[in-house]
Length: 224
Figure 1 (cartoon, helix red, strand yellow):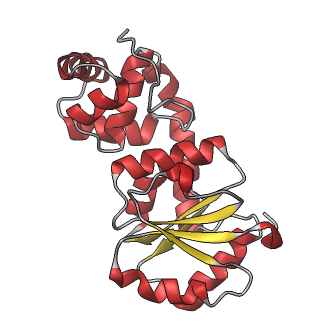
Figure 2 (cartoon, rainbow, N blue to C red):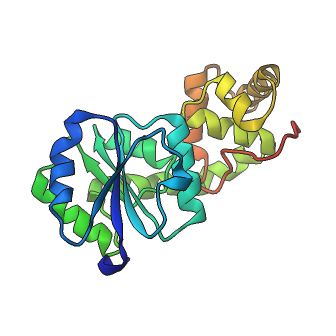
């Protein structure tokens, strides 16, 4: 991404602790800053190319899904997250969002500034250790995930994808336009096929085995 083509930086946050970062970004002459609340409609948030910074401390499930959909539809947007607590937190979020940049709570202002420059230049901003873990994860998915995925129906893949981002049964039912009873039935079949006993075990399976292309949201009302 050419820096001159970036019209704004959007920080999605409701919290006061983020003020130092807001001040830091506002001082960048080339990148005017606009704040967008997590609950604001994504459709109204961006009209031109942008670097979108998500506050990982406060972003909710609905906002995660909305931003994922927006970035999927508009690849000119660059998505990054800040306030992450650890690499494990980053891995969890990367299982849900196509992030190009990751910033931790302990990152010094100078490091954040450097990361912003790198992202504006169209490159990734992640630590070497995080990239190493991601590569190992994708290799495991390639080697062992496909056979397991083939045992699940399309609807089951959609449901476990929702489960992987922490959705409750009512939230899954609303997203997929099905009843909660149908969700429970699908979850029973998913647990049986994956040989897991708990929701947490199924969520962990989703994080480690679902490729980025597996649908996590359906726009149809069929229950098959």
